[in-house]
Amino acid sequence: MTNRNVLVLDTTLRDGEQVPGAKLNTLQKIEFAQQLKRLNVDMIEAGFPASSQGDFHAVQQIAKKVGDQISITALARAVKSDIDAVYESIKLAQNPFIHIVLGTSNIHLEKKFARSEDAVMQMGVDAVKYAKTLLPEVQYSTEDASRSDFEYLWRTIEAVVKAGATIINVPDTVGYAVPEEFGDLVRRINERLKTLNDKVILSVHCHNDLGMATANTLSAIKNGAEKVECTINGLGERAGNTSLEEVVMGLKVRENFYGCTTRIQTKEILQTSRLLTHLTGLDVQVNKAITGDNAFAHSSGIHQDGLLKDKNVYEIMSPEEVGGEKMELILTARSGRHAFKNAVERMGFSVSSTEEFEMLFEKFITLADAKKEVYDHDVFYLVTEHLNQPQ
Ligand code: KIV
Ligand code: ZN
Image (cartoon, rainbow, N blue to C red; front, top):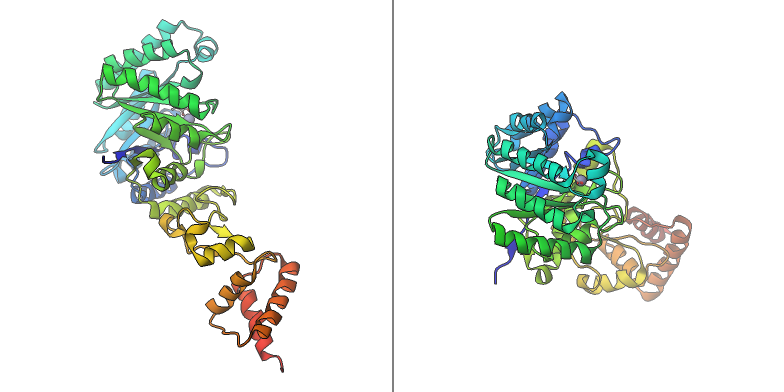
């Protein structure tokens, strides 16, 4: 059986950019969108054009500059003026689609809209019908889906699909869902959706408030989601969005389990992450999966020894696969003889006897105790100094 392809939409420039301090100017957004093109995402959500002239202009430029190969969308509330702004800003792209968002949970209906279920659903239907007069492809997001009453959620989906929505996006807006429950929600929607109209794409959009965005997204894929919305480095409001690199590498490394692939050029992942850090000034936590500085660094002696025997002992993917440099062994006082010997030999030195090696190793341990981390240049000086000493 061939693997199913999962579509990847990057929303770093829309949901990610809502983070305080992450504001990018138009040129920076274009530079980032060009990198997303190299990463080979299927779709880019380029912004929220009704929010400001600047955002409108940036979305328009992205649609012109990278919209020849990548599908471009932008966000609209369920109001005509927002939908017009999206259409005007993305219409020059080859494959544009309008993204409409409207809440479906009781708390949204009561507190945000103070309207009945039917009245809010009608707003959604009218918005989709209007968007369809402008473009054939329309995505509808049932905001706060994971806290919505299932039957009302389904009635809304059914109504907007009948009105012409071509993608249904199920958001866990406040990061409330847990994997089993979210997977179950997606499975139930998928079963009904496929009977209603099997051409409609089922998408998910998760937030990371409980640290479960990646797990929820993968669980949704396992249960039928065909498209995922993510950001690079998991950038996004509060605890962020689903991290693109985690989902993509999760599917790749555990391909046998998920039976799914993406079109992402994984070798571009680190470059994309670093560009985003450079443009926003927001650092990635050092132990962040895939893109953190320590994601491929091993410092314990037991692990280093195992890795030197065979990489697969402690490595489930290689840094090269995500565009990184070779596996890094950071020497510390806990690194064993094997790792130290490897570093010495890697630098072209050969140690003549066991006694000499033991002397060097003792010096290395003293240095590691003092310095905590020992780098290649430290090993180089330690060995040269030793060799230059009168014997
Ligand atoms: O989190 C959310 O619900 C959103 C929607 C616009 C998809 O960002
Ligand atoms: Zn969101």
